Length: 352
Image (cartoon, rainbow, N blue to C red; front, top):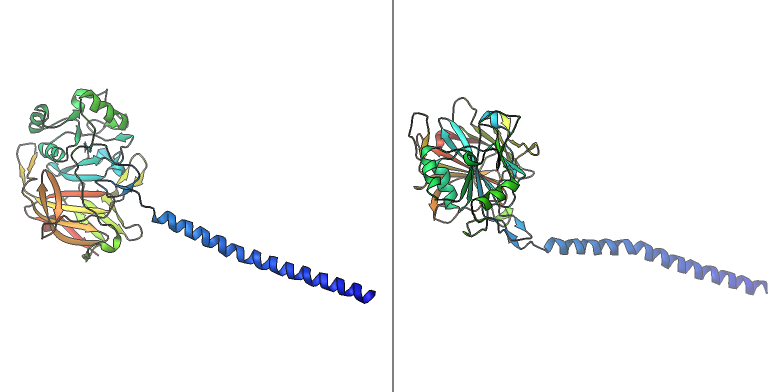
């Protein structure tokens, strides 16, 4: 009897041990299966590509862009810095306005910031650029030539000269003329007030690379200087960050940040166009030929190439020697206009 009972105990013990071993094996094998499932699910998520591309940044988004481009003249005087809204601009054009003073034309479409400024006065070539892009144009003030163009109705626009204190507000932290701003909400209200549509109708856009591997190889260049004057207040210095593959910007030895966030702006492409400049009055206002085309530089992904620029149906674009459009890296773009005399090489320097 004892032996039979012992056999039963031993058999039962072995059966339980076997079951325990199977359970342990099952528990140990479960995590890899779960991990594999997670990886497969993540892979599926990565494969989903957003359906639409923003026209002026080349970034993929969930919803189609229907907003008309909005261009604002932004003050670049040292007393106007840091400016509000620059980080939200898809493209910033920088050019001489009078003397050695530069101004910005900030193009907003994919994102309208809550505040933009300081807003400054119009020039005729500012308006020409906005017309080519079919943009809603915003400025505060105008040169005599720009006044004639705006009041002749060549472009939908709103100006702070007529709406100071209503659509445009003055900051108490700065002195005029460096303190005029317009809010993102008032941009839309302004369009309604002047009867301008904000529907994106002229389908203007840039051309973009689809991946980093496709970017053309050029001269390795990590540091760029654009020198408009000897005093340095309106000169730009760009530094390439190989980690996030964007450029930071300095002006007058100060980093360019957005006043809304106090964060540095990040730029994916820097274009520099050589153009004919001419001083037209005693104040030092200029005339810039944005139609003729000419030499250009493109900086992207830490490289530099010499290309050309053309005015195509009113839109300024960098082009290759064979006439095809220069492809841009998705992200923000900064465009400089520099005088053709003494030449682009005299205004731009770059090093590794």
